[in-house]
Length: 265
Image (cartoon, rainbow, N blue to C red):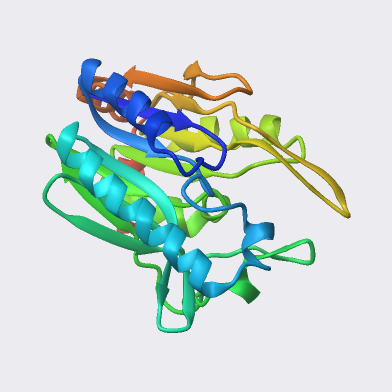
C-alpha cells in the first residue's frame, strides 16, 4: 500500500494547491494521505484572537472540500481541523473517506505559557485514553497528534491493539527536529510499526520572535530507520508500506511477545 504525507503551511482560500497534490496521490495509487497540524485552519496563535464565527466558517468550508476530494480521488484523508459545537472549540483530527467521516478529539493538549492549547480548546483531557484506530486494506492504522506522541500510554495503546502504522500530524518548531527524529525512530523500533509524520512548514511572527515550522516530514520503518523524508519546503512524500516488513521486525525482536506472556498488554 502507498501512503503519503502532505507537507504544507496554512492553505490559501483557493483549493488549487490541495487539488494538485491529491491528484498526484491518485496517480501514484496512494490509499491514505496525512496532513500536518494547522493546515486547514490558521495557526493556533492566530486562532486565539479570531472570532468564533470565522473559525467555524473556515473549518466547515475545509471539511466540505475534503469530503468532495476524498470522493473524487478515492482517498482516505487524515487531517487535523478545529471543530466547533455550540460555543465550544475542539482540536480534532478527521478521517475522511469517500463513504464516511470520523472524528478524533485530541486527548493531551499543550499547556505552556507561550502555547496554551489546553486553555483555549474544550477537549476532555482527563480519564481513560481512547485511541483512534481504523483498518484499511487489511492494515490497522492508529492516529495521534504531535503532542500526544510524547506520552508512553499512547504508544502502549497502539501496541496493545496491534496497530501496524501510526499517523502523526504535527506542527513542530523551535529546532526540535533532532529530538523528534530520535523519538520516532525509537518508538517505531520498539513497537515494530511504521510511523508516518506530516509536519507543517512556514513561519509565524509575534512579540516573542519567529516561529519557524521546519517540515522534515518522514516515514520511519519498523526497524527504526527513516526510509524517506522531506526538506523544509512545501512537498509531498509518497512511500510504500509492506505487511511483511512489519511481521519480520516483530518476529526478529519479539518485544510484544515478552509483554504478552506476562499479561502486560
